[in-house]
Image 1 (cartoon, rainbow over the protein chains, first blue to last red):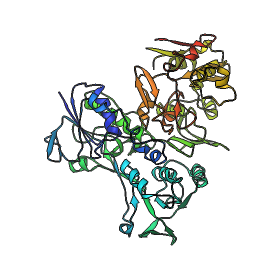
Image 2: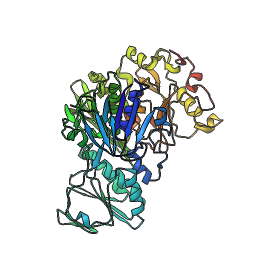
Image 3: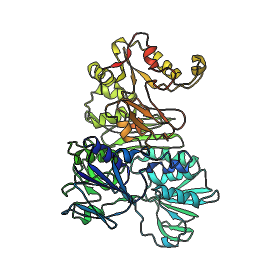
Image 4: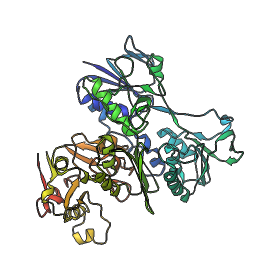
Length: 408
Length: 142
């Protein structure tokens, strides 16, 4: 009977458990989690602050999940991995593994701002504990300053906008959501946030803090009561790094999610795998990738044979009911449609759809995603149909009858 | 297990499946009351391409990508049926972003919606199938 050890209690760990159990029903699984609670849905913390969910509903799997899958939970921090003895050190325990998954995720990156230590109320926005702490720290008179206009910073802004007096978001980038949107689309989303009272200071950065005042590089000063740092995250790679494994920004993995250390796998926000949209390795720190990677790792750890396949960034984000879905690369021939209700951008490279940005009308977007993933060859006629709407009409009737009339 | 399958050769493009679906999932007893002057969110939709028409609804995939990608744990597969727990769903629409059939849709409020085979509404089995005048949509084992 195999001993599986998983370090990290996020979504990739649940996926790995499900992956292992799809192959091996009996092996022993140890789950080591420093967050000391069952897996919950971290991207939902903004919805929590909005009052749209609660910590009970945010549990990722039903309560019986770990018992049903015969998983022993160890709520403690994994200190080190001994790759020769194949053990993990946790507190005063040493746990032996046959297969180890490192799914340690990422931690908020806090730049070394001058005077940050003088700020009383400062928070990251990553965990349930962060959300609880912010909830306690703000009231209707709070002036909130958020550093970082990315996905985390803006969801935080949206979630607090009804609860506080004012919100300012500052970012060195000249547009919001710079990792997933181009200029026009970013401006469109920014407008929605501004209509709800969020103000932006873009193309500027904090040079120093002094208690409740931030002085920016431009010389401008911003007074605040609560500071939220959402600059970015860093992959937590230390276990594999210290054990001598190959690392870059993340833990380097192949398409089976194996690291350079035998019998050690990595998945989720700590792992750096192949991203087809840039034809190179990078950390894709999104929940769907964490699941896919964790599941793939689990299957392979248990003796199955599964490749990750064609991975690329995907993002679903919305503010105040305006939704934006994005995928893939924004290169090649661009088709654009702008209406009062939103924006559609499709990116074609030769015969393939390689990326898209949809704002507003998002129905059927998964058809586009699937065409990118499957690298489906498209004729000019297909492209014209897809410009109108995502549709299965691009397939011939035989293929379509398999899709809609077969077991898939 | 039994699933909904479509045969486009028999589809008339009448869209009745959409109305029957919306009615079955409305909780109302009267079809007029359920549908008239309301924005409806049927869980099946008819696609048209020139003369070809066909209905599309959840395929209840063997390996459902929507379940794997769901960020709230609201989507799950049990006894072959992919279901959405609207109580857990926050309406991020990652499922809409990944369903290869375009069969999960944004609905009213803060939740996505999809076909659950009418197993838990008053209809008891797929309303789209019962109401299809040309048997272009069937509910059977394959």
